[in-house]
Image 1 (cartoon, rainbow, N blue to C red):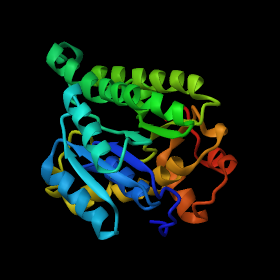
Image 2: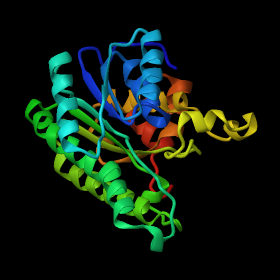
Image 3: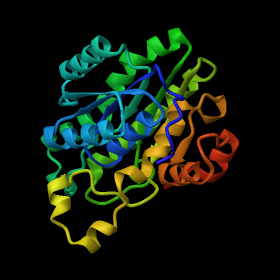
Length: 270
């Protein structure tokens, strides 16, 4: 992790799916730059571990247990955030679920759950927060996508549909956000990560060799810290390889220029 630099001091970030994986990396990354962070997750023990990691680094953090499939719980998360440190001006849409199934077994329940978690939650939180960001002329929305958002895979029809739609949502919003002071970007892991559906307990049961095949959550942190603090029109609507961007920041520091970030880490097809 790059040293703390305070670029996001006074800002409030909300990260969904922050209990594990890339979501934990996102929470660590924005906290490292001084943001107060609201971590939202449905698994209490995993969320507690994220909070523990963040507090060990001196982060200002609020844990909100919420089911992102339910708009009422998203509303509650926003209300708790507002009472705590104020309305979030940084949003990381990360929560996702992947249930592998051939299409004939992709029943309405599986379909609905996938789209509610992966797409609807991102839409709703963005819809709630974007107008305030525009009114302030300042804000940041980072949405985590996947290779499945640009390329189809068998047994992932619901997941691919949700991620393709998510890409369209963000890219379309970016056209509207241009010139309004709100940074809207997409990120894709760029490196193999622990499957979304695998819990930390299941991951811990794997052999050391199997665990080593996946990038740790902390490896993506700098990418989120960089994008959350960057205020450059050239980044709006762009899609980044989060692994490559994080590595670039680790190598060259937080002051990496937007042109350099685009040269080294922008991606479209993976």
